[in-house]
Image 1 (cartoon, rainbow, N blue to C red):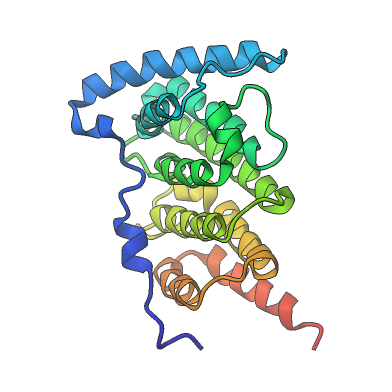
Image 2 (image 1 turned 135 degrees about the vertical axis):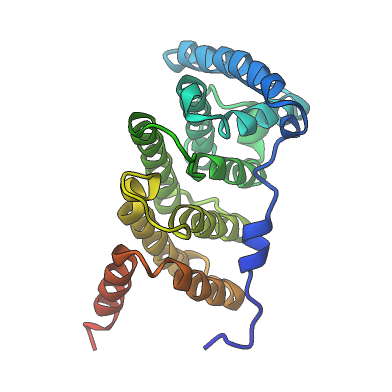
Amino acid sequence: MYCDWASLQEEIQCDRGHQSVLHKFPASVGREVACHVVKHIAQNLSIAAGTDEPSSLQDEKDVNWTMEVLCFGLSLPLTEHETINNCVKVYVEWLTALLNPKPCVPRPIIEDANPFAQVILHHLLNLFTPRPDSVSDLVSKQAVLCHRVLRAIEHVAKESVILTRETWEVLLKFLLAANDSLLSPPTEKDDISDHLCDRVLSVLFMIWLMACHKSFPSPSLWKTFRNMCLYWRHHEALVTMWHRVNHALTAMY
């Protein structure tokens, strides 16, 4: 149907939005910065959670700098689980700016939630990147964090009334990229795709259908969706999901 339109697959796969300025420094430097800064932010978040105390990040430049650190933190090895977990905790809280923002969300994000949410989605892609040679216990913990992010994104897609068309497009691209990162490589027993395959596919299909109602995807996105699915078809879950959705959409006719 959209064969004459350009696919966005290369753009999605080559996107650098999940790279932090800290990636330009030695890994040990980035790790030290991320572990200390993220721990402090998460502690302040926990303290503020039970109060109406606003975030100390009041300027856009402060938020932007902090997000560079959070972005890097999400890309750390799974042995740094505490830091990765704290990064997820912060970003899940900040995504409430698209719903009913909590006081702990920085003021610049509350005032202009969509652009910041788009950046957050790019950064969260780091969480869905497989870490080769990680022990199974840490991979399981990574999967738990991915589930948490997917739940938060589902909630935003269902309930937010302020999502712009641009944010919907970034959201769909994020889900395509996350699925591609997890499902394109050959399957290995007990790897991260083994934990998340069904879930990440179901969220992609469900939110795609929501977008059809709220902000219809562009022809290029439709073509990209189809093309990228071809690279995941070695997963039985994709075939099952594709059949299930098509059956549900055509059963009424």
